[in-house]
Length: 511
Image 1: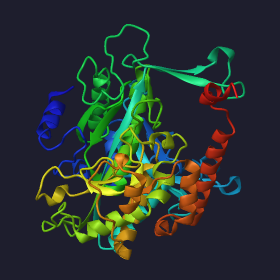
Image 2: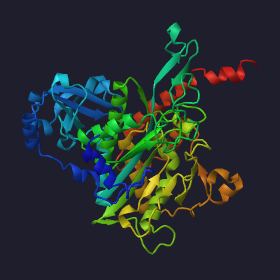
Image 3: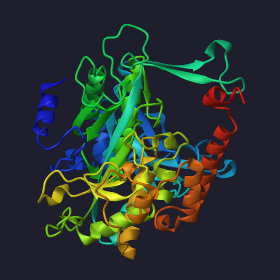
Image 4: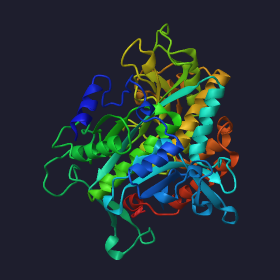
């Protein structure tokens, strides 16, 4: 780890805690301003770049890429795009009879890819997707949905929005499919998985770094066995992807549950950064012979991984969420309406913020994940939290939405949250009174009296909610995109429902 990198982290230590508290310093984007196409081409020549990787995101959040020789990149590539995409082969994009699409690199996303230096200097761009023969944005491109959301916010008078997702993850030593010896790769004959990690209580080898269930938070080495690997991830994110790291640490669960916090930024750039973060986590783990896992609930009996999303709206250089005269949490009326919109649409948004069947293994009581729809300051049992570390700091005033997990498409997630909050502002949705109690311990009668609702209990239920409450997404989400998305997610739920579960054998073999 470089001295410069250590000094950078020490400089922000007083302003950023490892709980994910955002810094009041300048946002991430100021670190790396956008470059012009001509300046970018010149840099490719000066750096003797040989390969350019063009990355784009599919509807389900997958980060995909195609590599082209650097010599094929021209000025026009940043305007009309590069014809290298068969949309019919991408989840949620085009039909086979109309599949030609272009990738338009964003010069501001230029980054070095450090994995294979022997093949020559390689860089990458994150791209916008265009329909072949047209310069028009493609409405199923998640990055375009996020861009359109920024335009909708600006039209409503909010010229800036800042975002700070907190990404948690596991890195396992290995995962075995059982019965792998029989070559079974599906559930025709029954199957299960065995997760290996030296920290885990079930580890059968030498015990050097045992972390018991729910006792991993901020553990120091040797118990935090992933610290060197996370530091390597952070160095690459800082040095090659130009991101500012705020903190990294061991999270609550055993088996190396971890979190990396990067500096906040505006809506689209922050979504780009989260894609980079996921990409680096996976690749660094793989290069050490390990498996990064961003599936929310891989381990029974311990905490799952989430992706709490911090957000704030700004107008003419001032926070639209701060009001020093508010006695509760220094919230403006605009912020209260925004919270009202988030609460109003929480159930529908689960189909986007918690988009896989496994997401609902996390949304259960007892593991610090939100189950109930409520808001409060500093209350981690509510799904909408108002962080309140200091008084009198307008720049720090934000809303933390605790429901999402890392399996979500970050572009669609940020867009949905912004549009839900904006709907609350437009309709002046006043939220119920804040709940300053442990909601998990309230009786059903008390929760009803406090107007506390429950989040969906399954992906199928969440999709039902989205189908009945999708109008708030119309300003940026094409109806065809939502139709395709819901159809694909229905198929995922069906595929799970068709297969026997290992626990069913334990529970029902003697019926």
